[in-house]
Image (cartoon, rainbow, N blue to C red; front, side, top):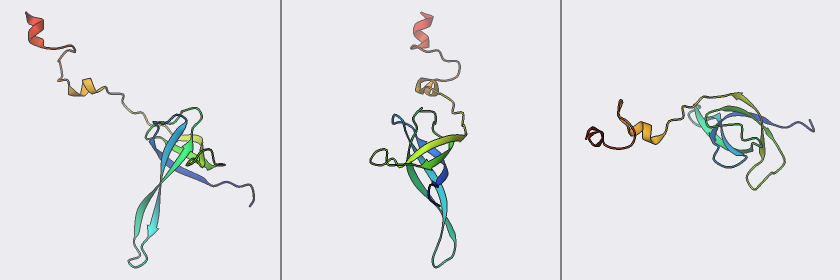
Length: 109
């Protein structure tokens, strides 16, 4: 069994740091008394050398040597890429048909 490394599949929760992603791995824990399962989430910090993964992507991680204080995993591949719409804050606040750059009354005068 020597030489085998653990692998985990999870969802990227954060990609703000350079060459680092935070991945959430979901698993079930059985309650001791009630024998019901409850979903738990473990956050793993992984090394992403190419900054290829983004929030929401399903990724495959592999155990690695310690890369930093918290990084013990590395990105192997992106299993499923998620397309996230790039919406600017100005576009959210603007009403449909309204133009950028100020008052519509000022444009009429």
